Length: 129
Image (tube, rainbow, N blue to C red; front, side, top):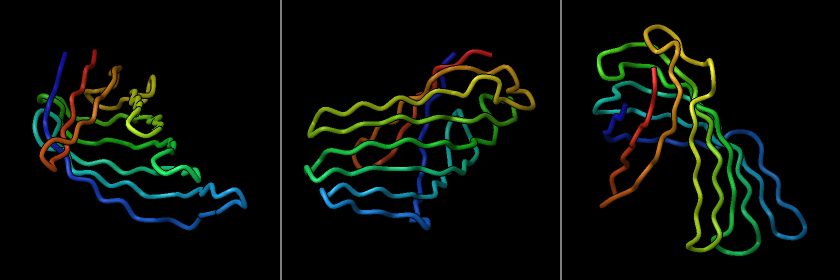
């Protein structure tokens, strides 16, 4: 099954930031999202990031719990993020953590793709129940 829509995201720095002698910087952020469309709800999570001394080169991991209604079914699930950037070569993987679903989404599995188009954030969720 597939679900599409838009989302708004707010990120805030959390206590933890380190800069190494070689120019790499480690950081921690909170994630708060509001989803609209076939997934309607919100999420909260945390992100750890690393930026290297090379401009445009970075990586991050994050966990966020999504709660709301997905195509008429209510519940929650956890998304795990893995992203790397190297100039224009970017890779982003978002997967639903196995057995993390609750309510009517108890048996959910799948992946999510995030896109930014014309300054707006979009999601495409491919899932199974």
